[in-house]
Structures are given as structure tokens and as C-alpha cells.
Length: 271
Length: 287
Image (cartoon, rainbow over all chains, first blue to last red; front, side, top):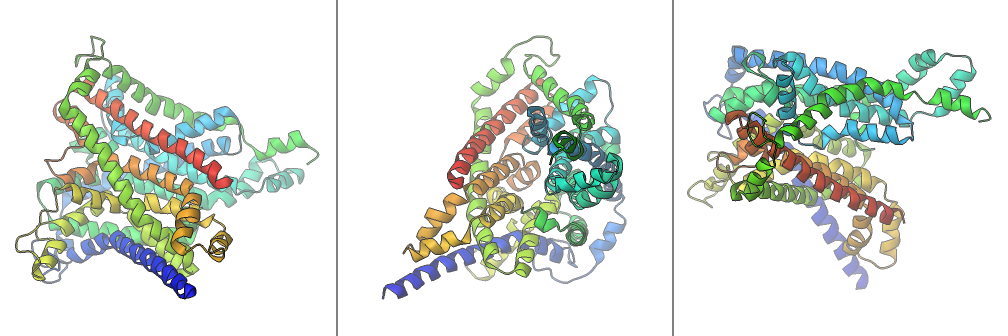
């Protein structure tokens, strides 16, 4: 009797947890699927399910030059910000990763702080500083602003990769007569490369998707894709945006699949 | 091991390598924030008169205070929803095989890397007057007129919860993975039921992950400008939009600076409360 009560009790627990988990997973994945389906509508509205299916809005997307212009700007800024983040971030990660000193811990907190501070406040602050020193908003100011908010991802992932590195490998290399630079190129870099790539990937995605910093540091001549999309959505619910969303979702899925292969992204983010 | 000084030499790099990023942050992160602080301490837009006028204005204005209050409340609601939905995902993750584990992680991860505008747009399609929920309820004959879901607090909370869910779930998965599975069996063999084991063993031991997840979710939810403005619409005002309106539309930079500083402080207070709790819980979990 007691045993049966126990199994019933255990069963109720497992049932509740599993059902809630499945509901949560559906809530996470459903919106992307819905947008993907709606983007193939043949109608003029965002009605779900669509009255029929066609590629007309994707064809429409081909001629949306404003979106092309914004996408090009976003891509340029994201590539430069990622490059700058990797150069500055990997160097900084090497310096602070194994150092127990107070200054290293303080620098670590400083480099991570853009992750928790409201980025909108930083965007406004950066705009005020640039206008104080007489710098016009341009792609350059966007790259600088984006680098500040993207570099933490590179630093964090590189530090994590360096922490996995066996110090004895470096000692052996030195004992065998390799110079520090040679050891770095042939031992350290190959071992931490997946970590750097994972960090760079997340930095790139977050720059490409950045709103709070771009909001203040762009103007009509340097329109950015997420801002353009947001302003289009504020005005009217355009099905072209659904097609663009479809493109972005498919591109993200493809990139994540590649990154999972190259860097084991999923393992990296849960350790 | 015998050559301690030499080994330290080859396994660590000089702090000089951090100098470029440190300088970059000094010029483009610390300096702007200091200038923000400086400007917020002026009573006029030309920044000629020092004073606490902007802060007094904010703290004595019921409207400003209500915007701050509703923003902090929104963060708490979103965090609670994420925790309730995210914990079972992390629990399920520990129960399934490696293949399903990868699938779960990728499902959790994908939204994190998909554009926020796209994800928010999806919720407009779902919650709108002609959206999925209203269409389904109407076709089932449960309601006659469409429910107002968009531009409501409920809509903002559910959309933000979905957008921020990965930030809660990933630390939880990490934390649950560190719990010794034998503890679960021990608790059950000593007569505690599954619910009791969960509340008394699993939940306390996963506290560091819970707190890390809550910190990230909360900080992200209250600054989520796009989701707040598109799902909340014109009638619901939260701190990020308030800040943006004052800075961009009204060009009132000193007041916008003061709003930024107050917002920054609010986030810092919440984060440090969570961090302190995290430190305490780690002592507890480690014991």
C-alpha cells in the first residue's frame, strides 16, 4: 500500500515536471515557427494559418532597398566590431585568465560590466561623449559602441577556454626549448581556438541584433537593420518584415548548426 | 615543479596584454558614463548650473516614479515566469539521453541568437486581434469578440519571458548538472517522496544557478526596449522608452542622464542583492 502511494507520488512529480517542461519548450520554439509559416502567406495580412502559400513576400524583399541598405550597414558594423572584439578581447583574456591579483579581478569585472548595465544608458552616454569631442555619428562610432557591448562575450569564452588549458603543456613546451611566441602559436592558440570562435560568433550575433546602442549612434545615413525593422513594425504590420524574419531565422539556424559542429557551442554554454 | 619561478613565467601572460582593452574601455565606456553622471548633476540643458534638480524632479514626480516602479515590477514578473518554466526544462535535460540533450539545448539556444525584433514580431502575430490565440478561441466558440492581448501587461510579460528564457535555463542546466545524482537516490531511499526531495534537496543545491539565472533574466527584461515598446504599445511606458523619449524626442539630455543614472543604480542594487544571495547560497550548497 505504502509502495503504491510512493510510486503514485513519484509519478505525479515526474508528470508535472515533464508537462511543464514540454509546454515551456513549445513556448520557446513556437514563435519562430509561426513567423516562418506566416512569411510564406499568399495574402496581405499576418493571419494564421495563412489563406494560401506563396513566395511573393520573399520576392518583395528582393526590391526592398531600404532594408538592403540597413542590412549592409549592420553587416559591416558587426564584422568590424567582432574583429576588434577578438583582437582586444583575446589579448585581455590572456592577461587576466590565470592571474589571481586584485587588478586582474577588477579588470575582469570592468570588462564584463556591459553585460548587466542597461545598454540604452551606455548608448546615450556614448552619443553625448562623441558630440562633446565633436565626432559625428558614423559607422565608426557604431563600431566603437558595438565593440564595448560585444567584447565581454569574447573575453568570457576565451577565459573559459584558457581555464581548461593544462599548464603542464606550456611548461613542457618551454622545457623542450620552444619560445613563448612559438608555444602560443602552436600550443595555446589551437587549443583555445574553438572558445575564441564561439565568443566571436556570439559577439557577431549580438552586434548584428543590437538595438540600444545603435538607437543613439546611428542616423539616416547609417541605418541599422534591427532599428529599420522596429520602425517599420511601429508604423504598419508589413508582411515583408515576416519574409525578412524568415530569412534571419533560417540564417541563424544554419549558423548555429555550423557553430555546433566547429566549436561544440551547446556544451560550451552549459559548463 | 622544481623551477617554480620559471614555470610561472611560461604559464601566465603579462598584464600588459590587457592594456589595449583597458584603455579602450577607459575612453569609450568609463568616460561616457562619467560624463553622463556629470551632466545629470546640472539643472539646465546648457549644463551651466550645478544641482540635484534633475534627481529631485524625478523623485518627486509621481509619473516618473510610477514608470520606475512598473519597470522593476515587470522584471520581477518576467523572472518569476522564466523560473517556473525554465526549471522543469533543466530538470528534463538531466533525465534524457545525450541526443535529446543536444536537441533541448539547441531549442533553448536558438531564440537567444535569433534577432530580438524577429522574436517580438512573432508575438505580435500570436497575440494580435487576428492572431493565433484569438483565432483559435473564436473558432472554438469560446469567445465572440477578440481578446485584447497585445498592448497589455500580460502580453509584455509572456513575450519577454519567451525572449529571456535561455538566460534563465542555461545556468539552471549547469547547476543541476553539478548535483550528485546519488543525493536524489539517498533521499528517496530514506523515505522522502519525489516532491519533498525536490523541495528539500534539489532546489537548495541548485540555488547558485537559480540566482545566476534570475540576475541575467531580470537585468535583460527591464532593459528590453524593443519588446517592451512593440508589445506594450503607446500606453505602457517603461524606463528604457522613457529615457529614449526624453533624450531623443525632447532633447532633454540632463534629465535623460538622471533617468539613466537612476536606472543604472536600480539595476546595480538588484544585481548586488542577487550576487550577495548567490555568495551565501554557494556556502550553503558547498556545505
